[in-house]
Length: 255
Ligand code: GCO
Image 1 (cartoon, rainbow, N blue to C red):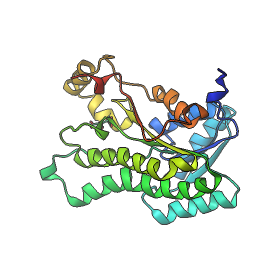
Image 2: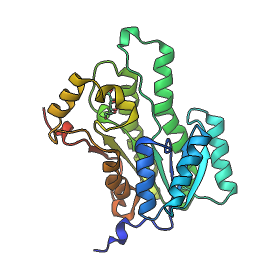
Image 3: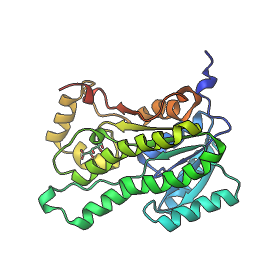
């Protein structure tokens, strides 16, 4: 069995929200596996900095600055990629926000903002990528879910609803696109050491709960998603579709 199975040479990956955090870690990992990367973020300056850092490592990187919740900007970005002859072989729907508040204190506007960013954007960007992958009869879609794709926690209602939707959207993409050579899967990261989780990491009680509740007895590092991302982006997963792989230190496997 050759390691070519995991070789991404000749493939181009668009990773949303990839100027930092989990998205940046996956961008670095897919690039190291041979992929050309289209970095995305809302802040062109931060995006250019990330691209420069990756190019300095010898990676081939394009930049696509757009806000994932701005449908017109998403469509314009895909049209620009088309015009530049850049075909997206791998889409990682990673961009997301967190907003922690009990349901009874949550405004509908805050609910909508989280669901729009974490779920609707993945549909819109997935639709635009899918439209282009279908005629080519090949493509890989990796939707970033969460522990909350299957489990609830207090104060993260809209995030949980959106991430459960990510799991279901992945299954719908499979139902409609697998016969056309497109594999859509999800990754469910556990508690990872990211900026989004900084308030939790710095909270002694919450930190102790994560360490105690996780069989691996620690938070995850963003680069620990890379192996699963490469697997789902590569030929090694050509008969895997509609699945969610939890990279969570075992948290979802135990009571
Ligand atoms: C929270 C965290 C989680 C993690 C991750 C777990 O407030 O519980 O933000 O949502 O970020 O999504 O999979």
